[in-house]
Image (cartoon, rainbow, N blue to C red; front, side, top):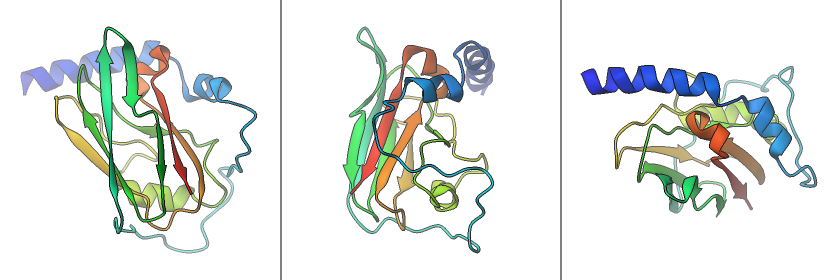
Length: 163
């Protein structure tokens, strides 16, 4: 427990110095045709978790001599598939979706499928082999870009492309 408390304190310090999602959004490929949703767009009604009904793809969260990265960094999937993010090396890691790069009308469903309290951010994972799963159920085709907030300064970014 003492180790997790120390890591939480360390993560807070790292987060403060790593930048922001606004910096991340500026680094995204501006040529990609992505519809975005503003914070003023409300869902049409209650949105419920949509379970994984297809294939689960695994993404390793890594930190090593090569750098910090998601492996693979680009995941191609279909609605109903799932993505399992697993720490492979040097945590802590998390997955935070870029709210400016979510296809129109999909924010509420993405949040419901994440099963988390924090809007568009996964739990912080600390230990090797610790994992978190995301359902892509009922999500429309498009690009869903994400970052690892503790390692944003190291450009740890990724993207799910739902086809």
